[in-house]
Image (cartoon, rainbow, N blue to C red; front, side, top):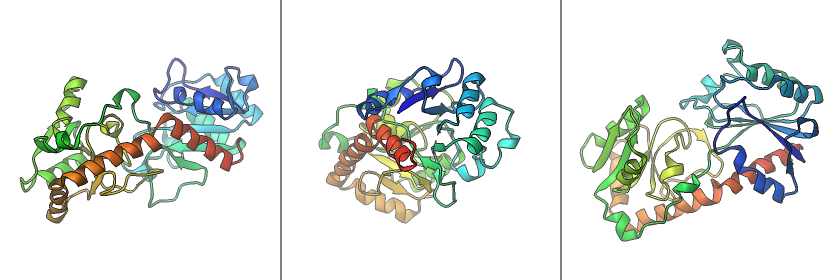
Amino acid sequence: MKFYFISPLNANSPGLYETFPETFMAQGHTITENIQEAECVFFDMHSGYLPYDMAVLDLVLENRLPVVVFDAHDYHGNSTKNWYWLWNYKTVLDNDWVKFLTSAKDRCKVIYFMRKIQTDNEFPDWVYPYELCQFPDHDFPLVSKDELNSRPFDACFIGAESARRRQFVDALQKEGRLKLDIQFTTERIPHDEWLNRHRQAKFFIESDGGGLGSERPYQLMSISPMLKQKNNQLIVNNFEDVVDCVILNQSPSRFDIEDFQVILSEAETIYNIYMKGNERMKKHFSWQARANYILDTLKQNGVC
């Protein structure tokens, strides 16, 4: 099948289209730069506010080509309420993607890949979850068990503040039993400093939003295991509590923290979680794994 990639004019989403060609071509597909040759188009929603080449979009609709949408917007942990295409698109600014996708939904086969789908609400059967991939330049050499367990902090969070993150961190700090390196900041600190601060903690904290809600896991998974805030977001091949991460409730209770302290006292358990977290990240969140997942989904829907 010949795929054609559509991005906004003079813009693209890093870590998206460049991750596909090698795997696609290995399975006999091709990437074309000629919309007249296309048999299926990929559509990058990007920020949702940029213009597209409407002549290309009109040809897609005219030829009724299958449309594969990639929506990586941050719906802030409430995709059901905020997913503006299905529920609120009429109130969104009159953007090119609104005109195109509302027409495509009626005229073309649409497969919609979306981050942060909530598991407790129904979505159309043409909507599928997807995630980012591990950052290739952040696949660092793994540390030893002794090095990981000798770190001075139990967990680290450095990043922007939100209500959910503050609630989670405040609960962890409440009784003062955990050794935490916490910094809410409105400005980015130098990235090497950010990484090295996390190298002083046994766990990094992932909180707020849905699923792997930020880019932190894709950057930090080879530095330390993940201490994750529980949420109800759908992820294919999700991480498992006390297998390849540790998951605590949004407002961890005294008993949750006591359970976490038991884990912190077991060097072998911490190291196993660390190793298995890396194994899951590389197996299911690599460029190749995601590309194969997308092709498999298209095949299931009769697109290719």
